[in-house]
Length: 421
Image (cartoon, rainbow, N blue to C red):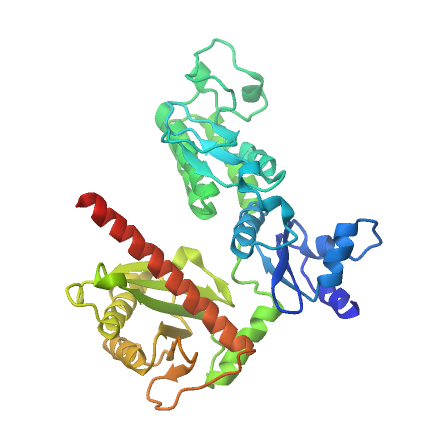
Protein backbone atom coordinates (compact mmCIF):
# COMPACT_ATOMS: atom_id res chain seq x y z
CA UNK A 1 0.00 0.00 0.00
CA UNK A 2 2.89 2.37 0.72
CA UNK A 3 4.14 2.07 -2.88
CA UNK A 4 0.65 2.98 -4.11
CA UNK A 5 0.60 6.03 -1.85
CA UNK A 6 3.92 7.10 -3.31
CA UNK A 7 2.52 6.60 -6.79
CA UNK A 8 -0.57 8.75 -6.30
CA UNK A 9 1.62 11.52 -4.89
CA UNK A 10 3.29 11.73 -8.31
CA UNK A 11 -0.05 12.27 -10.08
CA UNK A 12 -0.61 15.79 -11.44
CA UNK A 13 -3.37 17.99 -10.07
CA UNK A 14 -4.97 18.27 -13.51
CA UNK A 15 -8.23 17.00 -15.02
CA UNK A 16 -8.16 13.42 -16.16
CA UNK A 17 -9.22 9.81 -15.78
CA UNK A 18 -7.68 7.32 -13.35
CA UNK A 19 -7.68 3.54 -13.74
CA UNK A 20 -7.36 1.14 -10.80
CA UNK A 21 -5.87 -2.24 -11.72
CA UNK A 22 -5.52 -5.57 -9.94
CA UNK A 23 -2.42 -7.79 -9.79
CA UNK A 24 -3.37 -9.35 -13.16
CA UNK A 25 -3.29 -5.90 -14.81
CA UNK A 26 -7.10 -5.90 -15.24
CA UNK A 27 -8.87 -2.57 -14.92
CA UNK A 28 -11.24 -2.92 -11.95
CA UNK A 29 -12.37 0.70 -11.61
CA UNK A 30 -12.40 3.85 -13.74
CA UNK A 31 -13.04 7.33 -12.39
CA UNK A 32 -12.72 10.94 -13.52
CA UNK A 33 -11.33 13.88 -11.59
CA UNK A 34 -10.88 17.61 -11.93
CA UNK A 35 -7.62 17.19 -9.94
CA UNK A 36 -6.22 13.66 -10.28
CA UNK A 37 -3.86 13.67 -7.29
CA UNK A 38 -6.46 15.10 -4.92
CA UNK A 39 -9.16 12.66 -6.04
CA UNK A 40 -7.02 9.52 -5.89
CA UNK A 41 -5.59 10.59 -2.52
CA UNK A 42 -9.12 10.63 -1.09
CA UNK A 43 -9.31 6.82 -1.40
CA UNK A 44 -6.42 6.42 1.04
CA UNK A 45 -7.94 8.46 3.84
CA UNK A 46 -9.83 6.83 6.71
CA UNK A 47 -13.32 5.79 5.62
CA UNK A 48 -16.18 3.48 6.63
CA UNK A 49 -17.33 2.59 3.11
CA UNK A 50 -17.14 -1.19 2.72
CA UNK A 51 -17.15 -0.95 -1.10
CA UNK A 52 -14.09 1.31 -1.05
CA UNK A 53 -12.41 -1.07 1.38
CA UNK A 54 -12.95 -4.05 -0.96
CA UNK A 55 -11.73 -2.02 -3.92
CA UNK A 56 -8.52 -1.05 -2.12
CA UNK A 57 -7.87 -4.66 -1.11
CA UNK A 58 -7.77 -5.62 -4.79
CA UNK A 59 -5.92 -2.49 -5.93
CA UNK A 60 -2.41 -3.26 -7.19
CA UNK A 61 -1.58 -0.47 -9.63
CA UNK A 62 -2.81 2.97 -10.68
CA UNK A 63 -2.72 4.36 -14.19
CA UNK A 64 -4.04 7.69 -15.41
CA UNK A 65 -4.65 9.82 -18.49
CA UNK A 66 -4.41 13.59 -18.29
CA UNK A 67 -7.03 15.54 -20.24
CA UNK A 68 -7.10 19.20 -21.11
CA UNK A 69 -10.48 19.93 -19.60
CA UNK A 70 -13.30 18.80 -17.34
CA UNK A 71 -15.44 18.01 -20.38
CA UNK A 72 -12.74 15.77 -21.88
CA UNK A 73 -12.47 13.90 -18.57
CA UNK A 74 -16.25 13.32 -18.52
CA UNK A 75 -16.30 11.97 -22.07
CA UNK A 76 -13.16 9.85 -21.66
CA UNK A 77 -14.40 8.30 -18.39
CA UNK A 78 -17.54 7.12 -20.17
CA UNK A 79 -15.50 5.67 -23.06
CA UNK A 80 -13.12 3.85 -20.69
CA UNK A 81 -15.95 2.30 -18.68
CA UNK A 82 -17.58 1.01 -21.84
CA UNK A 83 -14.23 -0.34 -23.10
CA UNK A 84 -13.03 -2.10 -19.92
CA UNK A 85 -16.35 -2.84 -18.14
CA UNK A 86 -14.68 -2.65 -14.71
CA UNK A 87 -16.32 -4.84 -12.08
CA UNK A 88 -16.54 -2.04 -9.51
CA UNK A 89 -18.20 0.48 -11.82
CA UNK A 90 -21.50 -1.13 -10.82
CA UNK A 91 -23.55 1.84 -12.00
CA UNK A 92 -22.60 1.17 -15.62
CA UNK A 93 -23.82 -2.44 -15.76
CA UNK A 94 -27.40 -1.66 -16.70
CA UNK A 95 -27.19 0.73 -19.65
CA UNK A 96 -30.97 1.13 -19.80
CA UNK A 97 -31.00 2.72 -16.34
CA UNK A 98 -28.82 5.63 -17.42
CA UNK A 99 -29.79 8.58 -19.56
CA UNK A 100 -28.86 9.87 -22.98
CA UNK A 101 -28.54 13.42 -24.24
CA UNK A 102 -30.84 14.18 -27.15
CA UNK A 103 -30.14 17.08 -29.52
CA UNK A 104 -33.42 17.74 -31.33
CA UNK A 105 -32.02 18.63 -34.76
CA UNK A 106 -35.38 17.44 -36.13
CA UNK A 107 -36.93 20.69 -34.79
CA UNK A 108 -36.67 24.18 -36.26
CA UNK A 109 -35.19 25.49 -32.99
CA UNK A 110 -33.33 22.48 -31.51
CA UNK A 111 -32.97 21.81 -27.77
CA UNK A 112 -30.69 19.57 -25.71
CA UNK A 113 -32.65 17.19 -23.50
CA UNK A 114 -31.98 14.36 -21.08
CA UNK A 115 -33.92 11.24 -22.15
CA UNK A 116 -34.10 7.56 -21.20
CA UNK A 117 -34.93 6.05 -24.59
CA UNK A 118 -33.54 6.41 -28.08
CA UNK A 119 -36.24 6.56 -30.76
CA UNK A 120 -36.15 6.89 -34.54
CA UNK A 121 -37.03 10.57 -34.82
CA UNK A 122 -33.97 11.93 -36.69
CA UNK A 123 -32.63 13.60 -33.54
CA UNK A 124 -28.98 13.14 -32.45
CA UNK A 125 -28.31 11.01 -29.35
CA UNK A 126 -25.19 10.96 -27.17
CA UNK A 127 -24.29 8.68 -24.27
CA UNK A 128 -25.36 6.75 -22.23
CA UNK A 129 -24.06 8.77 -19.28
CA UNK A 130 -23.26 7.26 -15.91
CA UNK A 131 -24.86 8.50 -12.71
CA UNK A 132 -24.98 12.29 -12.32
CA UNK A 133 -22.57 12.75 -15.24
CA UNK A 134 -25.35 13.77 -17.63
CA UNK A 135 -26.27 16.77 -15.48
CA UNK A 136 -22.62 17.82 -15.28
CA UNK A 137 -22.39 17.74 -19.08
CA UNK A 138 -25.60 19.78 -19.41
CA UNK A 139 -24.29 22.31 -16.90
CA UNK A 140 -21.06 22.74 -18.86
CA UNK A 141 -22.85 23.16 -22.18
CA UNK A 142 -25.21 25.76 -20.74
CA UNK A 143 -22.17 27.83 -19.83
CA UNK A 144 -21.00 28.10 -23.43
CA UNK A 145 -23.86 27.55 -25.88
CA UNK A 146 -26.96 29.78 -25.47
CA UNK A 147 -29.54 27.50 -27.10
CA UNK A 148 -33.05 27.34 -25.72
CA UNK A 149 -33.84 25.22 -22.67
CA UNK A 150 -37.64 25.46 -22.66
CA UNK A 151 -39.75 22.37 -23.38
CA UNK A 152 -42.05 23.93 -26.00
CA UNK A 153 -42.30 22.12 -29.32
CA UNK A 154 -42.75 23.90 -31.62
CA UNK A 155 -41.34 27.08 -30.11
CA UNK A 156 -43.87 29.90 -29.60
CA UNK A 157 -42.92 33.50 -30.29
CA UNK A 158 -43.23 35.93 -27.34
CA UNK A 159 -42.97 39.58 -26.51
CA UNK A 160 -41.09 39.08 -23.25
CA UNK A 161 -38.06 36.76 -22.81
CA UNK A 162 -37.89 34.00 -20.21
CA UNK A 163 -35.52 33.73 -17.25
CA UNK A 164 -32.96 31.72 -19.24
CA UNK A 165 -32.50 34.66 -21.61
CA UNK A 166 -32.15 37.10 -18.72
CA UNK A 167 -29.38 35.06 -17.09
CA UNK A 168 -27.53 34.59 -20.40
CA UNK A 169 -28.24 30.86 -20.91
CA UNK A 170 -30.48 31.35 -23.96
CA UNK A 171 -29.99 33.42 -27.12
CA UNK A 172 -33.70 34.37 -27.28
CA UNK A 173 -35.03 32.80 -30.49
CA UNK A 174 -38.60 33.24 -29.16
CA UNK A 175 -38.18 37.05 -29.20
CA UNK A 176 -36.25 37.23 -32.47
CA UNK A 177 -32.83 37.89 -30.90
CA UNK A 178 -31.07 35.28 -33.09
CA UNK A 179 -31.59 34.10 -36.66
CA UNK A 180 -32.22 30.47 -37.61
CA UNK A 181 -28.86 30.08 -39.41
CA UNK A 182 -26.86 31.47 -36.48
CA UNK A 183 -28.83 29.36 -34.02
CA UNK A 184 -28.17 26.16 -35.95
CA UNK A 185 -24.47 27.00 -35.98
CA UNK A 186 -24.54 26.88 -32.17
CA UNK A 187 -26.37 23.56 -32.33
CA UNK A 188 -23.65 22.15 -34.61
CA UNK A 189 -21.04 23.27 -32.10
CA UNK A 190 -22.84 21.33 -29.34
CA UNK A 191 -22.90 18.22 -31.55
CA UNK A 192 -19.17 18.57 -32.16
CA UNK A 193 -18.44 19.01 -28.47
CA UNK A 194 -20.53 15.99 -27.43
CA UNK A 195 -18.85 14.01 -30.21
CA UNK A 196 -15.46 14.75 -28.62
CA UNK A 197 -14.36 17.41 -31.15
CA UNK A 198 -13.79 20.27 -28.74
CA UNK A 199 -11.47 22.17 -31.07
CA UNK A 200 -14.06 22.23 -33.85
CA UNK A 201 -16.72 23.39 -31.38
CA UNK A 202 -14.53 26.35 -30.43
CA UNK A 203 -14.07 27.25 -34.11
CA UNK A 204 -17.87 27.35 -34.49
CA UNK A 205 -18.17 29.79 -31.60
CA UNK A 206 -15.48 32.03 -33.11
CA UNK A 207 -17.28 31.97 -36.46
CA UNK A 208 -20.46 33.19 -34.76
CA UNK A 209 -18.56 35.98 -33.01
CA UNK A 210 -17.02 37.07 -36.32
CA UNK A 211 -20.44 37.11 -38.04
CA UNK A 212 -21.96 39.18 -35.24
CA UNK A 213 -19.09 41.65 -35.42
CA UNK A 214 -19.42 41.93 -39.21
CA UNK A 215 -23.13 42.73 -38.80
CA UNK A 216 -22.13 45.34 -36.19
CA UNK A 217 -24.07 43.42 -33.55
CA UNK A 218 -21.42 44.29 -30.98
CA UNK A 219 -23.53 43.26 -28.00
CA UNK A 220 -23.79 39.71 -29.32
CA UNK A 221 -20.13 39.67 -30.40
CA UNK A 222 -19.09 40.72 -26.90
CA UNK A 223 -21.38 38.09 -25.38
CA UNK A 224 -19.80 35.36 -27.54
CA UNK A 225 -16.29 36.68 -26.90
CA UNK A 226 -16.77 36.17 -23.16
CA UNK A 227 -18.00 32.63 -23.76
CA UNK A 228 -15.03 31.89 -26.02
CA UNK A 229 -12.62 33.09 -23.34
CA UNK A 230 -14.29 30.87 -20.75
CA UNK A 231 -14.27 27.94 -23.19
CA UNK A 232 -10.57 28.43 -23.98
CA UNK A 233 -9.80 28.57 -20.27
CA UNK A 234 -11.62 25.27 -19.79
CA UNK A 235 -9.58 23.78 -22.63
CA UNK A 236 -6.34 25.37 -21.45
CA UNK A 237 -3.43 23.00 -21.86
CA UNK A 238 -5.55 20.59 -23.87
CA UNK A 239 -3.00 17.91 -24.68
CA UNK A 240 -4.47 14.57 -23.79
CA UNK A 241 -1.70 12.73 -25.55
CA UNK A 242 1.20 14.98 -24.57
CA UNK A 243 0.93 14.00 -20.92
CA UNK A 244 1.20 10.20 -20.83
CA UNK A 245 1.58 8.55 -17.45
CA UNK A 246 4.99 7.32 -16.23
CA UNK A 247 3.83 3.77 -16.86
CA UNK A 248 3.05 4.45 -20.51
CA UNK A 249 6.32 6.29 -20.96
CA UNK A 250 8.15 3.25 -19.60
CA UNK A 251 6.48 1.15 -22.33
CA UNK A 252 7.76 3.56 -24.97
CA UNK A 253 11.29 3.51 -23.54
CA UNK A 254 11.29 -0.28 -23.33
CA UNK A 255 10.21 -0.46 -26.98
CA UNK A 256 13.02 1.90 -27.97
CA UNK A 257 15.51 -0.38 -26.23
CA UNK A 258 14.04 -3.59 -27.69
CA UNK A 259 14.15 -2.24 -31.26
CA UNK A 260 17.45 -0.35 -30.73
CA UNK A 261 15.95 2.87 -32.00
CA UNK A 262 17.91 6.13 -31.87
CA UNK A 263 14.81 8.05 -30.85
CA UNK A 264 12.01 7.16 -28.42
CA UNK A 265 8.97 6.13 -30.51
CA UNK A 266 6.54 8.61 -28.96
CA UNK A 267 4.39 8.81 -32.09
CA UNK A 268 3.57 5.42 -33.61
CA UNK A 269 1.30 4.83 -36.61
CA UNK A 270 -0.20 1.38 -37.10
CA UNK A 271 -1.70 -0.02 -40.31
CA UNK A 272 -4.07 -2.93 -40.94
CA UNK A 273 -5.95 -4.36 -43.94
CA UNK A 274 -9.43 -5.88 -43.87
CA UNK A 275 -11.02 -7.86 -46.71
CA UNK A 276 -13.40 -10.33 -45.08
CA UNK A 277 -14.73 -12.79 -47.68
CA UNK A 278 -12.49 -11.12 -50.25
CA UNK A 279 -14.78 -8.13 -50.79
CA UNK A 280 -14.56 -4.38 -50.23
CA UNK A 281 -10.88 -4.34 -49.17
CA UNK A 282 -10.05 -1.43 -46.84
CA UNK A 283 -7.08 -0.17 -44.88
CA UNK A 284 -6.83 1.59 -41.54
CA UNK A 285 -4.25 3.77 -39.84
CA UNK A 286 -4.28 4.51 -36.12
CA UNK A 287 -2.01 6.95 -34.32
CA UNK A 288 -0.69 6.61 -30.77
CA UNK A 289 1.28 9.26 -28.90
CA UNK A 290 3.06 8.26 -25.70
CA UNK A 291 1.07 5.03 -25.62
CA UNK A 292 -2.31 6.76 -25.97
CA UNK A 293 -4.62 6.85 -29.03
CA UNK A 294 -4.88 10.09 -31.02
CA UNK A 295 -8.28 9.40 -32.57
CA UNK A 296 -8.48 12.69 -34.44
CA UNK A 297 -5.55 11.45 -36.52
CA UNK A 298 -6.92 8.02 -37.45
CA UNK A 299 -7.44 7.50 -41.19
CA UNK A 300 -9.45 5.10 -43.39
CA UNK A 301 -8.51 3.93 -46.89
CA UNK A 302 -10.61 2.32 -49.61
CA UNK A 303 -8.21 -0.07 -51.36
CA UNK A 304 -8.05 0.59 -55.09
CA UNK A 305 -5.10 -1.43 -56.46
CA UNK A 306 -6.29 -4.84 -55.18
CA UNK A 307 -10.03 -4.29 -55.37
CA UNK A 308 -10.62 -7.26 -57.70
CA UNK A 309 -8.10 -9.62 -56.10
CA UNK A 310 -7.41 -8.93 -52.40
CA UNK A 311 -3.72 -9.01 -51.51
CA UNK A 312 -2.65 -7.84 -48.04
CA UNK A 313 0.99 -7.27 -49.02
CA UNK A 314 0.11 -5.12 -52.05
CA UNK A 315 -2.58 -3.31 -50.03
CA UNK A 316 -0.04 -2.35 -47.36
CA UNK A 317 2.09 -0.79 -50.10
CA UNK A 318 -0.88 1.26 -51.31
CA UNK A 319 -2.04 2.62 -47.95
CA UNK A 320 1.46 3.37 -46.65
CA UNK A 321 2.34 5.21 -49.84
CA UNK A 322 -0.93 7.16 -49.80
CA UNK A 323 -0.39 8.14 -46.16
CA UNK A 324 3.12 9.53 -46.71
CA UNK A 325 2.64 11.24 -50.08
CA UNK A 326 0.30 13.95 -51.36
CA UNK A 327 -2.04 16.08 -49.26
CA UNK A 328 -2.24 13.64 -46.34
CA UNK A 329 1.52 13.83 -45.73
CA UNK A 330 1.21 17.60 -45.17
CA UNK A 331 -1.74 17.38 -42.77
CA UNK A 332 -0.22 14.96 -40.25
CA UNK A 333 3.08 14.88 -38.39
CA UNK A 334 5.55 12.15 -39.30
CA UNK A 335 5.78 9.21 -36.88
CA UNK A 336 8.81 7.96 -34.97
CA UNK A 337 7.84 4.38 -35.80
CA UNK A 338 5.51 2.66 -38.27
CA UNK A 339 3.94 -0.72 -37.53
CA UNK A 340 2.05 -2.92 -39.98
CA UNK A 341 -0.04 -5.96 -39.15
CA UNK A 342 1.87 -8.92 -40.57
CA UNK A 343 5.26 -10.41 -41.15
CA UNK A 344 8.26 -9.94 -43.42
CA UNK A 345 6.24 -9.55 -46.65
CA UNK A 346 4.13 -6.70 -45.25
CA UNK A 347 7.19 -4.96 -43.74
CA UNK A 348 9.17 -5.06 -47.00
CA UNK A 349 6.12 -3.81 -48.91
CA UNK A 350 5.75 -0.93 -46.46
CA UNK A 351 9.44 -0.09 -46.74
CA UNK A 352 9.15 0.00 -50.53
CA UNK A 353 6.31 2.54 -50.19
CA UNK A 354 8.39 4.64 -47.79
CA UNK A 355 11.31 4.67 -50.24
CA UNK A 356 9.03 5.93 -53.00
CA UNK A 357 7.80 8.62 -50.60
CA UNK A 358 11.40 9.58 -49.76
CA UNK A 359 10.98 8.57 -46.10
CA UNK A 360 12.97 5.33 -45.87
CA UNK A 361 14.70 6.51 -42.68
CA UNK A 362 11.50 6.11 -40.63
CA UNK A 363 11.76 2.71 -38.89
CA UNK A 364 9.05 0.22 -39.88
CA UNK A 365 8.17 -3.07 -38.19
CA UNK A 366 5.52 -5.78 -38.45
CA UNK A 367 3.78 -7.69 -35.68
CA UNK A 368 2.72 -11.18 -36.75
CA UNK A 369 -0.44 -12.45 -35.03
CA UNK A 370 0.33 -16.15 -34.56
CA UNK A 371 3.72 -16.00 -32.86
CA UNK A 372 3.54 -12.31 -31.82
CA UNK A 373 7.01 -11.89 -33.34
CA UNK A 374 8.35 -8.48 -34.42
CA UNK A 375 9.72 -8.28 -37.97
CA UNK A 376 12.12 -5.51 -39.01
CA UNK A 377 12.99 -4.26 -42.47
CA UNK A 378 16.17 -5.83 -43.83
CA UNK A 379 16.38 -8.43 -41.02
CA UNK A 380 15.64 -12.10 -41.58
CA UNK A 381 15.22 -13.07 -37.94
CA UNK A 382 12.31 -11.62 -35.99
CA UNK A 383 12.48 -10.39 -32.40
CA UNK A 384 10.53 -12.34 -29.78
CA UNK A 385 9.66 -10.50 -26.59
CA UNK A 386 8.34 -11.96 -23.36
CA UNK A 387 4.55 -12.11 -23.12
CA UNK A 388 4.88 -9.91 -20.04
CA UNK A 389 6.91 -7.31 -21.92
CA UNK A 390 5.43 -3.81 -21.62
CA UNK A 391 6.82 -3.00 -25.08
CA UNK A 392 4.96 -5.95 -26.60
CA UNK A 393 1.74 -4.93 -24.83
CA UNK A 394 2.04 -1.46 -26.37
CA UNK A 395 2.45 -2.91 -29.88
CA UNK A 396 -0.45 -5.31 -29.31
CA UNK A 397 -2.72 -2.44 -28.26
CA UNK A 398 -1.86 -0.52 -31.42
CA UNK A 399 -2.26 -3.60 -33.63
CA UNK A 400 -5.61 -4.52 -32.06
CA UNK A 401 -6.90 -0.95 -32.38
CA UNK A 402 -5.88 -0.79 -36.06
CA UNK A 403 -7.64 -4.13 -36.60
CA UNK A 404 -10.80 -2.93 -34.81
CA UNK A 405 -10.85 0.29 -36.84
CA UNK A 406 -10.35 -1.58 -40.14
CA UNK A 407 -13.09 -4.12 -39.36
CA UNK A 408 -15.54 -1.35 -38.42
CA UNK A 409 -14.86 0.47 -41.70
CA UNK A 410 -15.15 -2.77 -43.70
CA UNK A 411 -18.53 -3.61 -42.13
CA UNK A 412 -19.72 -0.09 -42.85
CA UNK A 413 -18.83 -0.47 -46.53
CA UNK A 414 -20.48 -3.89 -46.75
CA UNK A 415 -23.71 -2.55 -45.24
CA UNK A 416 -23.75 0.30 -47.74
CA UNK A 417 -23.17 -2.21 -50.56
CA UNK A 418 -26.10 -4.35 -49.40
CA UNK A 419 -28.41 -1.33 -49.25
CA UNK A 420 -27.28 -0.17 -52.70
CA UNK A 421 -27.81 -3.65 -54.09
